[in-house]
Length: 129
Image 1 (cartoon, one colour):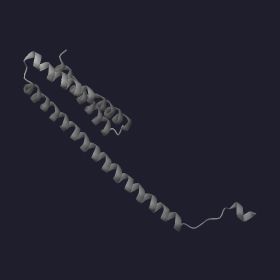
Image 2 (cartoon, one colour; image 1 turned 180 degrees about the vertical axis):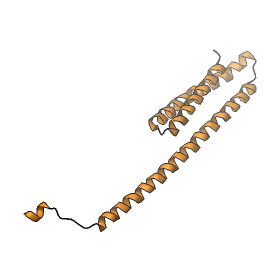
Image 3 (cartoon, one colour; image 1 turned 90 degrees about the horizontal axis):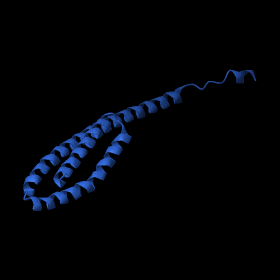
Image 4 (cartoon, helix red, strand yellow; image 1 turned 180 degrees about the horizontal axis):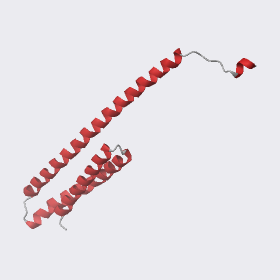
């Protein structure tokens, strides 16, 4: 397998992890989101190595790096769109969670106020002592 093929396979793996990450975000599966992000982090050194290898490989094969780079840019642009979409979904989930938290806080404060106005009742047992 050529270095170029390994490079594009690695980007395809990044795409799979990003799609899984998006599903996990929508399901609020935060451990899965974390594992997807960790997997993508581990792909970065491979991408750097395979990019260098592919660039070196073009010298021996007579392939123009500019042609490969054009395909790479298209792939990276597509991945950036996926990552951006995941970020937008995450932002929406975060805003919904914050709104829910604010509503729970309002309810808690309301319950505290209700309790403070409720009459204190003595125990029935204490009246027979």
